[in-house]
Image (cartoon, rainbow, N blue to C red; front, side, top):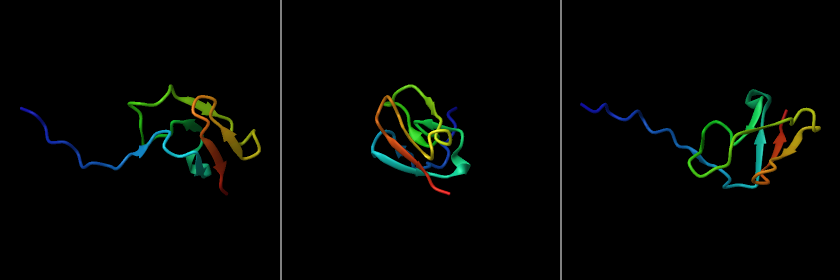
Length: 69
């Protein structure tokens, strides 16, 4: 017997935007981020946004992350 699917949580399309604003609650920062659709994305990498002065760019997809305080 199959189980019913859980309520669908809308996922952010991975690599769909070029700039993402993140907060300290999102740390440690990874690209793609949790909540992004991963089936067509690259391997998860962690970005040192705090060490980079509040901005980091993913080497795989060139997504630019900005830390918003």
